[in-house]
Image (tube, rainbow, N blue to C red):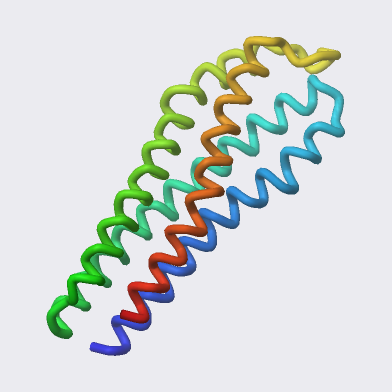
Length: 163
């Protein structure tokens, strides 16, 4: 039983690392690097990076859900959970689902419009079109919010392990 619990916890942490690591990489490394490119190339590179980040994020979110459920089941089998555990878990789940909702907004609301406008841009474009820039700003705002919530969710998860 203990080995399954350790494996599940490690998979949970790896998935969390991929999701949050991808977000941080995108914000701190990828997006600033794209700004150094000419707009025509930068627009296409940023869109391609967005597609890859979204694919990796969905895989991480799925693994987080599966391992989170397994961790909860294994915890319940190991004995009762104190009220403190239930409160922390509730806050963690609320914040996690807020992050998933933000990700859904990025993917289903802003990404289709970003992709459509990106297709219309010629490679020789010398400036960012305002409608596309506006959509990217909204998309990045949601990414920054998730980057802020992610460490809080991580710390709450560590508090669950300790309790």
